[in-house]
Image 1 (tube, helix red, strand yellow):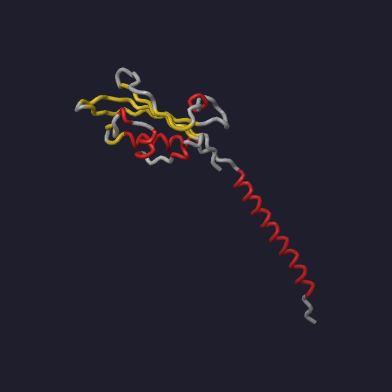
Image 2 (tube, rainbow, N blue to C red):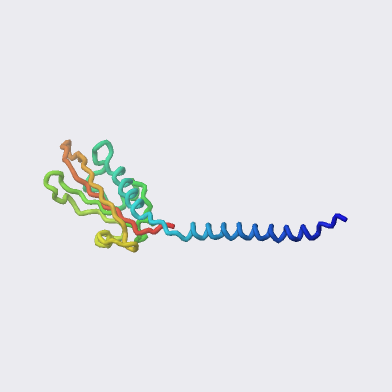
Length: 161
């Protein structure tokens, strides 16, 4: 008298159809989310330049002796990862100039891929993005204070995603 067998079969078909549709939409959403490439090159270059600037200058004074600055000192004192910066996906260049004369005081320190200096001027998805920061600071040498301009160039060609 109460034979509901036909109704249960009819509902189970709709139930599986709804579950399938939901699964398809979730799969499409996941594929769209993970297939988009995120360009974080500019952000990484800015962070690298800012972190280096914060390491070099504290309270308006240069934290290191100008003539002793080299790659190993930068890696050690600025807490930068040598393996990552030497991976040819990044560039860090630090130049020192006189404040008034704008004359180079020493050879620049370059870490990473030096070809970024040329490629940063080009526009495009496959070219690195670079940031240049100019910092004005004081350097104490033999109790004489000398004004300096530090130019920090940082570049990244690491496409996140």
